[in-house]
Length: 79
Image (tube, rainbow, N blue to C red; front, side):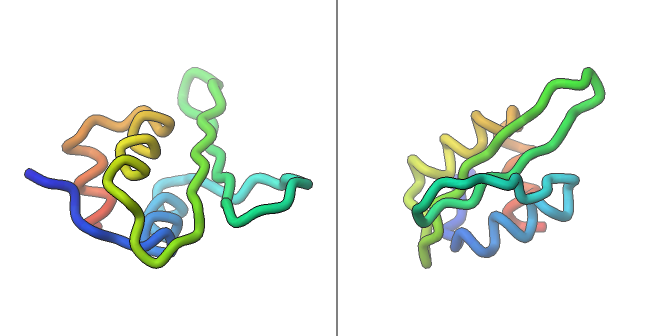
């Protein structure tokens, strides 16, 4: 199944529902850093650029950063 076309606001909202929180960062720019500590104590950092519709390559990068399977990520995006 293809990844849906979604906005960064949608991705951020859905990741926050799954335990990610906004990380404090001092940098400038149009990106949002989200962080979550998994059951092993490892920090997962996902960077989401603020755009109306995210390119598929960006969605794939977010999926890899968050260590989601394709099925998990599809469920998150359609959540």
